[in-house]
Every structure is written in C-alpha cells, then in structure tokens.
Picture 1 (cartoon, rainbow, N blue to C red):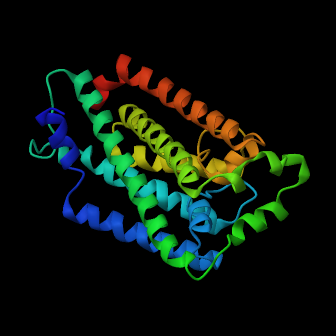
Picture 2: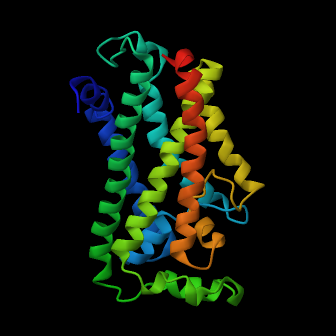
Length: 263
C-alpha cells in the first residue's frame, strides 16, 4: 500500500472513531443476546446478521440501520467539506480517478475490519455464553417458523459450522457496506452535499418496509437471504451477485464521470 493510500486509511482509524465503533458493536451484540434470551454462538451470529424484511419489527429495522449506518457515517466524515480543506486529513491527487480508487481500497480495508470486529465479538461473547447453554434455541425456533415450502431441510444452516456461517454472512454484509458507500459517493457527486448524500442513502432503507425479494438494500440480512432460495449457499451467492452488480453500476458511473464532481 502506498503512503497516500495508507494515510487515507489511517484517517479513518482515529482513537475516537475506533472507540465509537468498538463500544457500539459491543453494546449491539449484548443487546442482541438479551433480546433473544440466548448468548449461544450460533444464536448471536445469526441474530447479529438477522437484519430486516418488510414483515419484520421496528427494532430489527433500527438494529440494521445502526449496524450499517455507523461505518457509513464515519466514512462520510472523511469526505465532508471541512475535511477536504485540510490536506492533513485526505490526500488529493492530481489524478482524480486515482483518488477514487484509493478511497475504494481504503474503504475495503475499513469495512472489512468493521465486519471482522463484529465477528470476533460475536464469537468471543458466544464462547462465554455457550458454556451455560449447549444448544442453539434460534435454530429450533427457525425450524418451527419456516414452512415446508421453504425447504428448511435443504437450507443447510443446521449442518454448517458457526465459523462458516459467519464467514459467508460477514462477506455479504461487507459487500452491502461497499455497495452503500458507492451509492453514497454517487449521491454526493450529484447533490454535492455530504449530509444530503448520507440522508439519501440511509433513506433508501425505508423502502424495505415496502419491497423485498431482490431489492439490493438490506439484502445482506439473514432473513432476506433465506427468502432467496431454500439452499443457503445458492441464496448467499444470489445476494452477493446482486450487491456486486449494484456496486458495479454505480462504480461505472463514478469512474466515467462522477469522480469529476466528487474530488
């Protein structure tokens, strides 16, 4: 990684921001455990990535909004007008396309670290909770909730290790964060206002009350993935393709013309 890319990445890792992220994720993980009434690793893992669908409740929606909105908000600070005026906060290169690419590479590391931290907390807290609880209660509830039409026996969740489930769900959630961040850049290029762009992106989550299925916003939610296909692997692949396609469309716009309005 070049010094410029490294510096841009490190601007996201101030002690204050890292503290906000860490304590927010700890609080969210503990809240999930208390809400579910279980601190079993599998329960915490699935519920942490449970997300929201249009038949869900408000607390699930707010949980998804907080989990996805926090890193996007902190990332948006780097692009705020006041920060852009300070050369010690972000390096502005002569090649504006290179500026965009460096921003994307830094975002990849940032969101990857964010999701990895969530997984570490889930497995850490779940390890302690599993000593007092031998079985996952959420898997049993899911089996009762899912109708035979969904083909629960082909979903493979109950036969997968928590580590593999976490890896798959974590990768899909990171893809959604990258996709939402690219939408944020697109809105910022069009509106030329950081706050307006952030509110527009977060406002898209409100559409989840109306639509579901293949709608890309919030599709990294475990409950949404389950609806895509009875097979967990196939459903996860579908979600990943949808997110990559949405990301690609926005990236194509930004790399062709949007970057001129952004940097």
